[in-house]
Amino acid sequence: MSDQKPKSSLSTISPPPPSPHRLPSDPSLIRPKTVPVSPLVSGNKPPPTTKPLTIKVSDSLNGAVPGVLHLPSACSHSPQSPSQPPLTAAILLSGASGGLVGPSSIYLGVSTKLSSLNHGIPVLRLDYRYPARNKYCVADVVAAMNYLETSYSVSHFVLVGWSFGGAPVFTVAGNDNRVIGCATVASQTAETDSIRKLAPRPLLLLHGLKDQTLGSWCSEQLYERYGKHGERELKVFEGDDHALTRNAREAEEMLCRFVMRCAGVKEGKAEGGIVKQEVVDGKERVRLMERAGDLGSGEHVE
Image (cartoon, rainbow, N blue to C red):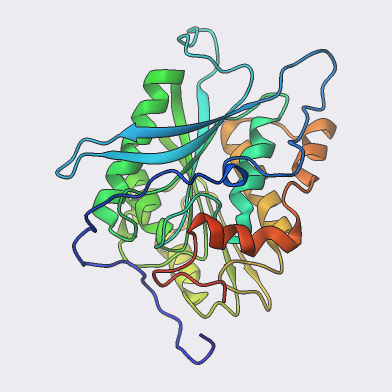
């Protein structure tokens, strides 16, 4: 891998395979083996629930997209009261191979932590039916947003994408005002032109300087395309790779704080303690990626 020149795209134009992705059977990919983060609040607040899903998608291929929903105890199927603030959820998207744990299994930590906050944020780790094909992946994301809006009265969304995942993130955000913020890790630049329509909604870009899959210049270009009329942040990690294996915990914390800011959740002592906890053992991060299917189809750690 180190002898290959980094690319700017992992999208494919090949026809979709005959069978879409399905939920993994391994329970550790649904919930980390680590003891789930306990809400750092007084009283008897129930812990968040983790719910495997298959969400119907209506497009030329139809079918259903798999995902895992981390739901705070306060969320229910009942409609939101008009007096309550809008409910925000985060949707986390993997790369060109699909999968559910993200770069260095960061998504396992982000989803567990955010759903465990005092004012918990629902998080959906979403796979794709047909990874690396932006048209169908965009339909997957929109179907997931519609599901969360209908089922849990979620009206605002923060989209997070790794690698190829930047393409559906910015395509959806540029055409749907329900998206109130976007973050990417090592995003490609192909099929991301809609980032020009994102501002003034906030943007966070993370990238490893030694990324040999998608060069760090991809995030630098996205930073410029976003423009100067909104809140934008670019963090390039010196010496790190495509999956941010050397700075996974810092990246995980940055993503948590970004989603919290977008959702209007203040970071007090309790929330800060949750964000800083280690949910996934550092030695397990890459192995979980392999088992979850996040690697392959052009996606690498390097």
